[in-house]
Length: 315
Image 1: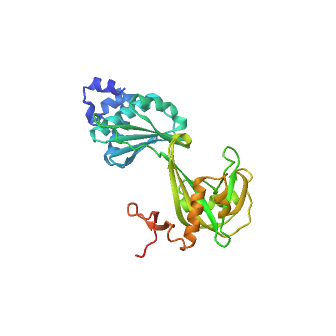
Image 2 (image 1 turned 30 degrees about the vertical axis):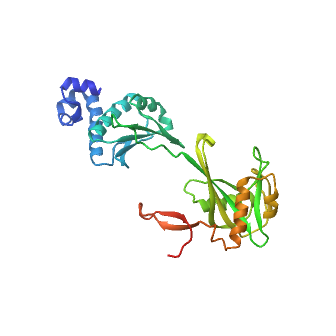
Image 3 (image 1 turned 45 degrees about the horizontal axis):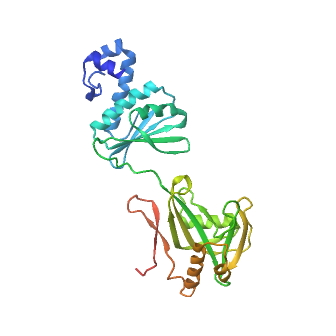
């Protein structure tokens, strides 16, 4: 339709038909073409103001690094309608020298993905009921679009009873049940590391605790879903001691002395390293091993907090 309208009226593609849309004659004799091209014109104005909603099916926002993010809303549309709008969008973005574009397409509109693919869009990521596609718009230059999250974050809590030199260990059910390890698991969305450690220890053993510090972490590649993985070990102080193993995940849980842990064959080198750190730290009030977490306000995003982890120092 876009090309037909252009050929009939001999107008240039780079003006998005704006000069023609005020002509009543076109609307009278070509109503369907007029309506579709008017959508492109409204979109063009929305893009000019950076943020806008150019009809009830799309909303557009400027994003970081001179990119554009378009949400395709839930209202059904045909592939032909989407193709017409997308072509107009791409022409506008290139003229405005945008570097990249993102399309968020709901799962119930997945038939539109093949249309976007025909213009070069690739999958960037998917979450819940929406897939996000991306396209690098700068010809002749390598794409600088950052990959989506490529690490998972796991956290374990080393819950230390200083009076008895005991650490809380668990045996998982399933594949890795032969090893005694610290209770832990994946961090939830928008959950800080220390909060994950406290939550996981309670869920797996029934023990309540306080976060004290970060002790160590390891990085590994090619783990679940082909992702890289960061696994943090936190020092926790127990607030309760009675054990209630999670029936779904935990085979056994137990308070064990560090001497026993260091002599065991059915634990990991990581657990033994943390056990030695605990002994060494206890003699020095943990100042030599603790990496504390300090809550501060983000200097990038106002009113947004973050946690800085660092050695404790006198300011």
